[in-house]
Image (cartoon, rainbow, N blue to C red):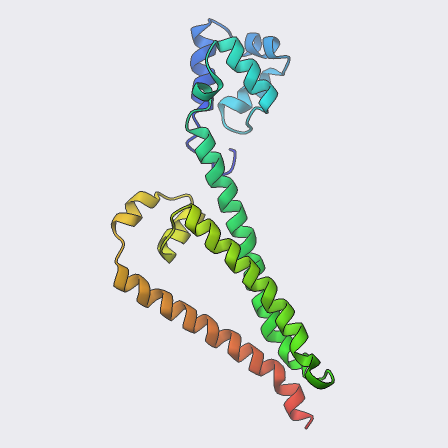
Length: 198
């Protein structure tokens, strides 16, 4: 199944229209110059037609492209946003850890140059964090529960109804403090070799 595409409309539309036109999968495949297996994959949501085939389907079924893919575009956008959020979350975590762990080795650099490696890693981490915030705004994601739900393709509307602002603020504060404490401890541990050599 196409990732994040569990509610795609096109698969139903294809089946409905080829049955309406009294075509078989083979007949439809011949008209589109694709294999019967390709049609089957579209119906079972294992793949999605490219723009060229969508236009051919639209003409063949005598329906607008918008009607053919209604609802699918929003689902696709959400899938793209989710993928981007996964990507930037990994970047943020990796570069935050690298920033913390680079403090100790950087102390061996001359003068004030020790600040450069952790700062560079931290800046990349902050860039990723800003990208995540932008995605959260475009998806109207306000709480950590919503973020997790979005990442797992759950229903955000139901979770938004249950939102408790005070509890959310407290949980955000605790998460940020625990994360900062862990990063701080890693940074301190990375300085031990430098401290022991004094």
